[in-house]
Amino acid sequence: MKMKEAETTVGRLLGFGVPLVSLFLTTAGVSDPVNVTKMTVAGCVGVAGFLLFLVFGFKESRVRYPSTLIASLLFLLAGVNAALLSKAPIAQNLYGTYGRNTGLLTYVFMVGVLLCALMMETEKSFKFLVNGLMVTGIVNVIYCAWVLAFGDFIGWSNPYGNILGLFGNPDFISAFLGMFIATAAALALDSKMKLWKRLILVLLIVVAFFEILKSHAIQGIVVTLGGFAIIGFFFVYAKFSGRVFSFLYLGISAVVGILAVLGTLQKGPFDFVYKRSVSLRGSYWHAGIDMGMQNPFHGVGFDTYGDWYRRSRPPVALVDMPGVNIMSNVSHNVIIDFFASGGWPLLLSYVVILFLGIRSILRVTLKVRTFNPIFVAMTATWLCYQAQSIISINQVGLTVWGWALTGALISYEKFALKVGTSETTTSKKPQSSRGVVTSPISPALVASIGVAVGLFLAAPAINAENKWQSANQVRDLETIKRALVPTFMNPASSFKYAQAVDLFQRSNLLDLAHQYALEGTKYNPDYFDGWKQLYYLPNVTAEEKNEALKNLKRLDPLNSDVTQIR
Image (cartoon, rainbow, N blue to C red):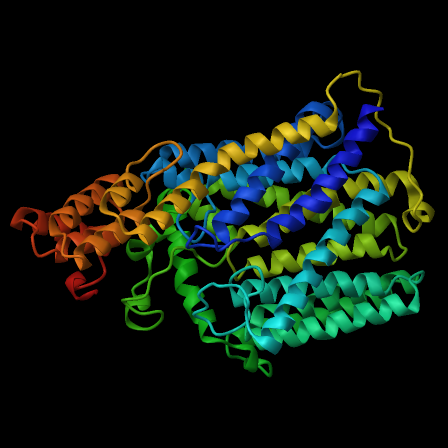
């Protein structure tokens, strides 16, 4: 049966591919070893999943998951609408900005991962995905332990001074380790697990939490405690048949949660959880919401928040926190980011996708009262991801788990309700309800084609990064100039133009600095730093200087003296 073979391919693709997105990075030939590399792998996995779904899963899913398909389609259409109507360059909308790479293509890949997960229908496939998350966590735990004990062996710049994991940022590794702890804790409560395996999981949890503390990022602590609370509910819910204990547990958890939220606002007994970054996020959130409100039907475009931040930030951001000279290119809230990027259409379609995930969790919980470690692990980890996304960034290595688990939870609902309580707690495989597919194309071939197509779609971003990095290392003038010529495989970027202008100015090649400063402002008229560079060039004409000042004031209208920003 082709469908059985396809489902096996799906399980392997997600079980190996999603972890690889989180784990893969390279310092060779790129200045950003994390984001653009993870986007490239996500392209291979996402497009492969998309093709598998279209060839083997679409017909069945139209009946089983119509709401999910409609929401996903609306999300993609809203994303295309945002990219086409954005004033930002199309390359920026497609591939994202430097250091983020969360453009339209990245979310196309994420939708592909979600749709692919809808084809999962055996306990083995769900276990494969959960085990993949465990492997990802264990690799990061070992790497972070090595860094703490002996130092970092990866040759990258670490301005934070804390552990980075394979995510390149203390906040991201902290949040992921919290998600990993939630998964490990759920699996450790499996009544059928051998004692020695439980002891290993407990040891991993202890080490991972120690590393979270060493990251000095509050996200991991919040995610860990939230994960424990969620797992605790499912344990109580399964052990006690009455509703009293479950409601009592929820009530206590709600009180603690409210106190924790108040603590982040410097109120109540938990005010120790407050960090200055919380106040910074208030301004970032305000700016993102303003962008969406000003552009309700299409937003400002993908990874274009940074171009709009100065004109959307509240007045308090200039005089208090974060300050007049501090800017951000992301709102630090995934939901607000979607509102800023694509307005109401993108926001609402994403919220519907989240609702479908929550609905599946509730339906399984109400119908199946037993403690199933795989379901609890997926649920707790998914909710932990959503919790951290409220105060964090849509980093590719993290967000791929959110999208994969959304699809997995939606498909798990059908699986759990079909096989019943007794079979969800065993390793038995239910008989597939899908028919025989007579297509001569094998699932492995479809997946391979998808990997190739995904690599082709993502290749321009990493190729441009490699070409520019190589040119900078060679320091040959003609090589650098060739690296600045935009082509399909070498898309332009505001960041690259800005680096070129700075390089030429420091080399006293003022004519070239002037030439590329003009090209940079023409490429993206809303890039503040491009106009700033042009304004301060010593060989700029009076007319160009006035034009640069005019645009600086346009892009930073609340600042009384934009010329003081250096």
